[in-house]
Length: 173
Image 1 (cartoon, rainbow, N blue to C red):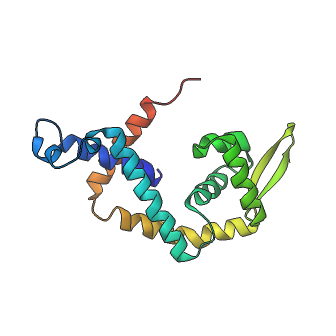
Image 2 (image 1 turned 30 degrees about the horizontal axis):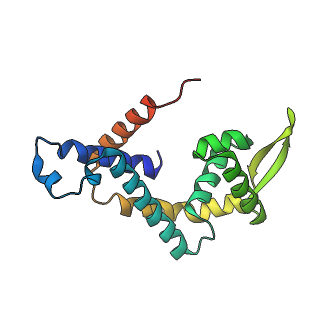
Image 3 (image 1 turned 60 degrees about the horizontal axis):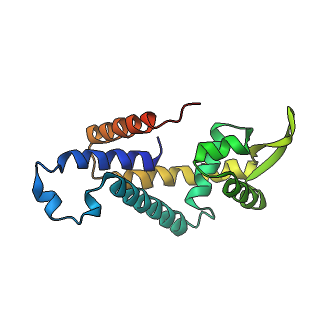
């Protein structure tokens, strides 16, 4: 489960605790803050900013979006660009640009798809694998820092609720 998903679950838990039947929390918030979608987006952006800042301080040489892409390729070696775009929830042109950047950094490589000459399979290079090994312990630490205010039970509930919303909205094919 990625950090954004966990954050969304945390927000959903807080929403349950601040319903119109308990007007005090709502009275202190502006109207936008009472809208679940706004809270989810705000929290997701805050998390992304936090992790981006941590990667910058670490001098990792990659962005949080590039990290997500490297991890996706690690989990699915040889993934094609279209499936990678779906996996990282980005449009195909954006993923193509990101792949170009990561290829230029020597972290990814494109290989011809043996089943379709029009496609490429994306693989980590040895430098890409080394980058994951270098950054992963720090990302784990950043996650612990981000979730420090949650108990294990709250984290599990948050993850469960976010997964429930995510699965409910999963497109049918």
